[in-house]
Length: 324
Image (cartoon, rainbow, N blue to C red; front, top):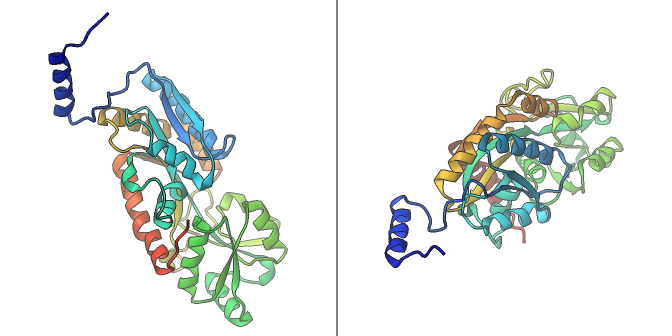
């Protein structure tokens, strides 16, 4: 049996320190890498992550697994990865809600921004400003006029307190200078049914989920929350071109590692993710569902996190929102 002498052990630790690596060993290439998705299986994001994992397995020659850990608006999955061994084998599919919004809104979380290392970006998606055609509004300015004329608060659908849709509604409320009330729904389809039925006047869903309803004449997409028109939706104006650059907003997904994970592993994983995100078949798949591929490494994801702190952090602070 091989025995490690005291002198050899000291030398090994010294080498680790010299390399600037944590004393947890760098993962071996025959050990699987796990991508933790903080949502249930079978959804759009889950499917994209599994396709990325397959391509990473081929490129790295190392098995890449996908594990779903849904619950509590992504907190369960994010908490699991934050507490995982930082050996370069476990990664989180982070996103706007589970990471940025939860950290900004919930002071008692078991993790913070410094619990993770950014690894790579994956994709982003826009919101919209959408109304039922029954209210006779065709522009964002017209929406403000409608609210003032009726003298009633605009009711806007959200996916719950602290969600992107909730906070974006507060941003729109400030921009238009009108009263607005949020109405929480368990899912987007039910909020659309209620909007068409006159139970709310505003929806901020991504364009792809709204196009059929617009074609049917039930709703009107006033704008997409992007700086420039999207190739997928060339006929939809943007909030920027309509004179509302403060309403530019999106949601994102990216790859994150537990803080202190070895650079050797995170760099390798980052490169593999970026290569996968450049795959034409995968990009076509995202394009068809209204998503935008984001090919970038740790710096790009860090820039996104910094942007979230500034944009969403101001919304949270200005409205004095705290969630348990």
